[in-house]
Image 1 (cartoon, rainbow, N blue to C red):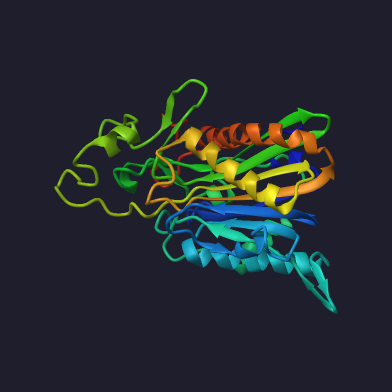
Image 2: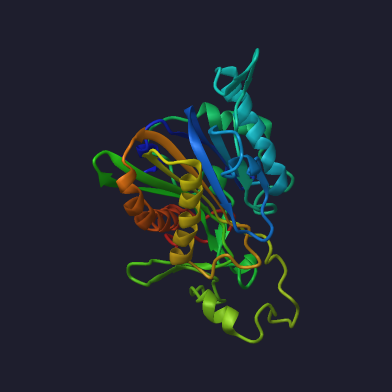
Amino acid sequence: MNGTLTDVFGIEVGHYTDLKSGTGCTAILVPSGATGGVDVRGSAPGTRETDILKSESSVDLIHGISLSGGSAFGLDAAGGVAAYLANHGIGHKVRSHVIPIVPSAIIFDLGFGESGIRPGHAEGSIAAQNASTAPVECGTVGAGTGATVGKALGRDHAMKGGLGTSSLDLGGGVVVSALAVVNSVGGIVDPDSGKLLAGPLNNKGEVMDSIAIYSDPGFGIGSDNQKIKGLLQNTTLGVIATNLALTKPQTNRLATLGHDGFAIAIRPCHTLHDGDTVFSLSTAQIQAEDEVPRLYALAPVVMASAIINAITKATGLNGTKSMSDL
């Protein structure tokens, strides 16, 4: 056990990171295939191939997931991941063709670094080439490079988000792990201690409670009495995986429970200004139907832990302070 998403046997993770441009992408590969699921709760999500993950769809296995910065432009990174897999003969075989299934989702990080640079086909391919079963690098990397949190007062008052991961050994060989790209309008709270870890910074550099800001009747109005812009520039992405064999409906249910982990650690979450999406994977190495209830009970805990990991491992970038800077 290395404490990251790759604790689930058969999963590989790789990043492409562009610190200068403040963006990047992350490829999650499953060369042997996995049952996939998804739960999209965002009001303005940017996704690709999520319909194929619905329980009633006819495609059983997927071969990777692409997470990227760059807003809608970043969906192009999935093409690079798919091309890499196809070049290695990984995907559904249709006559002489190899067709990898790579669902994708993006965060909004435009303008965080050098303008006009967004992850695309080439960057997705590099992330896939970098994928391995080694412990996943966390913090200001990959799809989390340009992530920020605590934007209830606008991005000028935000703190640095990032990419984090966590895993839990359930015993008997069953593992559940999670990865999160945290780019939320809400602040981040440690669910164990209740401590506020990240949120909007006031002019004194103090972390403020996003719930208190939302509770203010003047919410959304800046000091110059103008509406704060940029509240739609948010999305937290998650992937939750297990080696326990799950049916497609059960795998989709696992994605739904991943959102409970968002609610534990991100306050507020699932707002009108967030595009939250969680993917799920079952690599089906272990048959143990009686472990499903316990898997479901602990899935939110692992996702919340991945979110906390993203915030504690993030480093400041482009003038945006991280928790470690404070």
